[in-house]
Image (tube, rainbow, N blue to C red; front, side, top):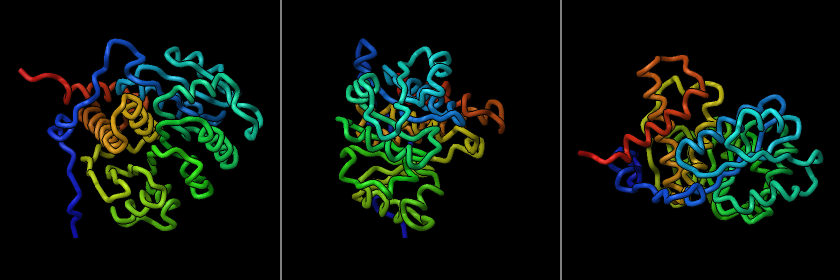
Length: 282
């Protein structure tokens, strides 16, 4: 049975929504903080952070373990880089704390690889005044162990199918299971081209092709969603814009080079995909 509130996402729909006026400075385009990373997966934070900037966010900070902060400082000249405390249960230092509290959207999860440290860090972030929180990767795996009341009202979840199964306590069969997840966590949920809200609103984004099934692609997607949210796009629309731009970037790359492009190739295409929607006709 079809969902009467299910909407196919088209360029026309996105044009009707539009995007906030970028203003005249980076401050007017919003600030994103990405919290994540590990010695094993430092690149996830890089991919997510670049994606946030590529969709138009104005400022970026990353909060990462001290074991990788120096490397990221070199490869991310656009970002402020802060270190997490060595003790995951210790309070956040003033630097990352200040960045998180001033951010318009905070993404937690890319590159983390320890469940207990992820949970402690997520709770430390959630204790601060966070306007919009986007969760991805390990932050979703530990979410059932977190009291929803400890998280901010503005919450976006970006699970893959395995993470959605953890959140639903079973393999999700259709959009009704995703709606159940959205209701359970009172959050917008984006999963493989479906964006759902707790009230059952559903948007279906055209598939971006098999080329997007590459290591790091999900980090780019999460960063894009956070970037749109930081720009002031409403939560559900931010998830739709991010999912659509990610899928369209995949289509563009597939048309250009075929299967085998890397996740690092996707962020520049996000900007070009958005330009297809926002450029003036005539």
